[in-house]
Image 1 (cartoon, protein in one colour):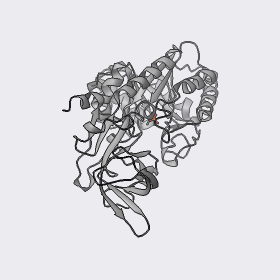
Image 2 (image 1 turned 90 degrees about the vertical axis):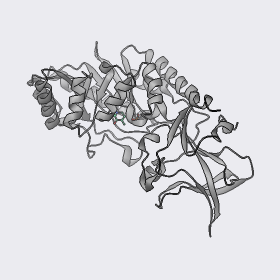
Image 3 (image 1 turned 180 degrees about the vertical axis):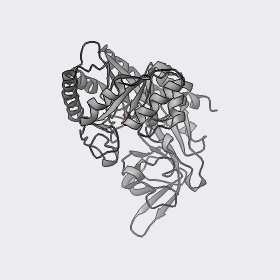
Image 4 (image 1 turned 45 degrees about the horizontal axis):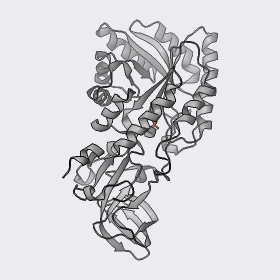
Length: 389
Ligand SMILES: *Cc1c(COP(=O)(O)O)cnc(C)c1O
């Protein structure tokens, strides 16, 4: 046992693997239900793309959250995990026909539409089945988020959504179509957002847009504000559960909902980020010309965030306590960007030591690839570990 980790059991499992702390996931889901539950008009969905491990999805569907999907595969994963079809929404700039048909066949609750050509295709495909599909329009609110450039999505320059000036036009086009029904507006400004001021800016923009729509006598049933709440990558022990109270309170305070309107959230990272750890093993400690390398058996194929976004993950040696040494922690992949951290202090590493790469529950396992013909990492929950003898 070191920290919260049962290293005795970890030693029996082939590395690298993901470990999901079930108790922390449950606690996070309880906090979400408590805090969102204070506002009867709030409805929380989970963004499947953050982590679609079936065991993780089962916890989340059992907690009563809906599902936000960005592909047909995710719609299927959500249905397989027991999310009810009327709590599934489907967003994405490039929906193919089979994906739209899958949504229509399963009567999902809403398509979040990102362009007029897409609206036309949904209307045609629904007509062919004699159905009416609910649609919301993803509006690009031109609100920046103070986060990494690769994960801001709400600026005018991004590929996502419909421009604000086209909003009424698109709603009117939909009103003339027989097989789609306009349901609401959808927004998503980015990810790993920790400044509540960014969400407040989104609220203010939505308030303006609502006034604008009312002048055109257009009413909206649901407002979907997307996800984006960040987690504390530097302090996974001190802040294991994100500040959902501050998050939901920001919306309650600043977004002016009309009577009967519901407010939807689509949280991904904040739900699953902290419960996941990538566990890897030190293969070699190599003394370079200028520095020391801890070469581990996990690589960017198992967790791509550091290589892709220069993302920070806290790294710990969970096998040994010892004098601190400074290491670059690197993987075995034939790419110079296959680096988890540079010049970090770790308890002295030896061949065979287990290393925990923390806060890896979101955009970790799901983004794994087989580059270099590697095996995909396996994910274990606390219950799975209990079965290992
Ligand atoms: C990715 C995504 C989310 C979830 O984002 P997080 O930052 O993980 O909360 C929500 N909605 C949409 C449309 C997304 O694309």
